[in-house]
Amino acid sequence: MNLNKPFFYGICFASVTWAISLYLFWQLSKSASFDSLTPYSSISTQQEGLHDNSLSHGEYEKANHAKDNVLKKPNHNNYVNSEKLIKELQVVAQKPKGHDQVLTDLGMVKTLGDQKIRDEGHKIHAFNVLVSNKLSFHREIPDTRNNLCKDVVYSKDLPAASIIICFYNEHLPTLLRTIHSILDRTPSEYLEEIILIDDYSDLHDLHSNLTKYINENKEVKRRVTLLKTERREGLIRARMFGARKATGEALIFLDSHIEVNVGWIQPLLARIKENRTNVAIPVIDIINADTFTYTSSPLVRGGFNWGLHFKWENLPTGTLSKAKDFVKPIKSPTMAGGLFAMDRNYFVDLGEYDAGMDIWGGENLEISFRIWMCGGRLDIIPCSRVGHVFRHRRPYGDPDGKDTMLRNSLRVAHVWMDDYKDYFLQQRPDAKGLNYGDVTGRIALRRRLKCYDFDWYIKHVYPELALPSDNEERLKNKWAALEQDKFQPWHSRKRNYIDQYQLKLTNTSLCVQSNKDIKTKGSLLILRSCLRAKNQLWYETDKSELVLGQLLCLQSGQPSPYLYKCHEMGGNQEWKHKGENKTPVYNIAAGTCLGVDKPKIGAVIMMKLCTDPSLNMWDLVR
Ligand SMILES: *[C@@H]1O[C@H](CO)[C@@H](O)[C@H](O)[C@H]1NC(C)=O
Ligand SMILES: *[C@@H]1O[C@H](CO)[C@@H](O)[C@H](O)[C@H]1NC(C)=O
Ligand SMILES: *[C@@H]1O[C@H](CO)[C@@H](O)[C@H](O)[C@H]1NC(C)=O
Image 1 (cartoon, rainbow, N blue to C red):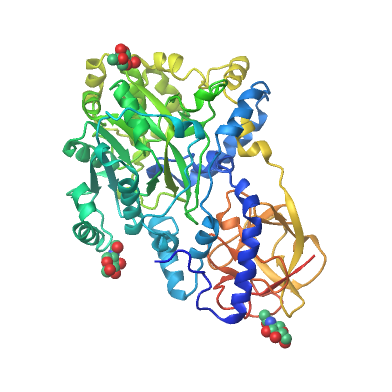
Image 2: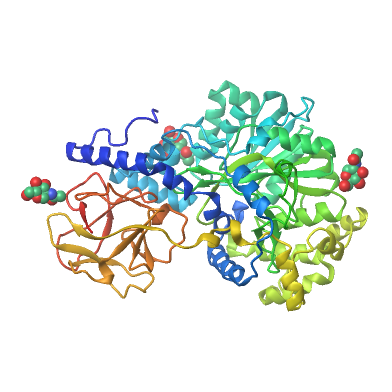
């Protein structure tokens, strides 16, 4: 596969000129669009549900809700120095030349066959399979470590790791890229083995295709062991199954749609070597589910709320005040769960996982509480970076439609949280009376390990956590103890408009207009006679959003785009055109262009193949 092959290869002449202009446009706008893509614009919303097995529909709304709360918090402007340092040290990612361009090209839907692959892929995997299919297993990604990290010298004498990757119906090329990124970027002396656990996938041929691939590739075969469970076990028991087969001194659990970055493993292993009770988490960078662009994440830590949902939050004020703070481990009350490293014997001594938990959810808080309360510690390691595809949703349900997250959370609450479990039960009245199974074994474990109680955990590990019983004064102090929202997207929420125009169908006098009132979320778009009216006036932002009347964003959908609240995460709200008349208007996530079936009043705007230029060329009327 040749990644540099222009995406317009083989399509008709008219489109070639278009494509070249579009290419130039992207080249010119690249630096600007990269700046706007800083991780700050996505961290809180996209990573809210990380443990990828847990990303749910509700997360996005929740993140927005959190955003609203944050806005009400007091603003603190001390730590000017730290802000400057963060600017210097935190975002250093350089995309390889042409990176954006290549990825944008790959997403373009050129045939109905492409469209089918993409749509079915979205259904099964909740990310853009079309792009992933075309990307090399060995693609380059930007080295997102800060410069200080690059100078750290690690001991050569580090424990070797068994890497455990569990998957259920994973997209094969994406899984293979995961494996190759590990083989490519891990010094072989630190890689004992990669253990793949197929958790009883039922995707046609997945297991046999993977087996075949492993057998046909010597280097892969030497390093990778593929196992399959005998029935659907869920992430938790599948990981225990894999860990029990492992022989490395260290265990590293990874998700199945990730790419590890340069030098990712040494900082994790060095941390474990310092003390076997240290558990280490890499910084989790963002691989965009629509475009597979790789961007760095800011340094944040793991927390939770009283619904026992994991959340990312800002670091305690002053955590990053000196340059060396940017390479030091950062204490984290919880982990997202998808990716972490731990001494293997310590994992066993500490009680592995709670095997009474089903499928997914809650186990990340359970192991986090257990590590802290029973004598270990949990830190984010800034110099280790692993990119993760943040899917739009969890693509598979719980078998039998059970809410395993709720049931698992109940087990966490009853084993570890002492009286604090009442806060959870108040938050989740629906948990009342739910059968959460037998937890006596886990309570015995807690006693055997002589763990601290939950009150100790709150006071020593997570004093910033707001309690429902806190008064206003205490809440204020807790908020003040965390870095404020200056590093978060809503800090710079002012939209930057760079252009405004009507979208007129070429060779007609018909313009794109909202079907309903421009304030109506979900409104479709239709053709109407061009009129200089608010409901036809599009404002383009520096993030390539199209905002109608400065209110709602144009969002791609199947089969039609519609108006929706601007989420500032690009993808389905990111539109490209060549900036002049007779241009296609291309959506990055959909890989298709704005078009209509017929050039007549009332025709609904659709997402059409860009390669069919008859009714999808637009003039920008400024
Ligand atoms: C397995 O391989 C066959 C032949 O290459 C292909 O048609 C099929 O889609 C593959 N299945 C999966 C799940 O990768
Ligand atoms: C390892 O960490 C634990 C808990 O923080 C501490 O009690 C112990 O002394 C440490 N061991 C070593 C060898 O430093
Ligand atoms: C617009 O009209 C011109 C002149 O008739 C024609 O050459 C061109 O192909 C038309 N463009 C589109 C997109 O229909």
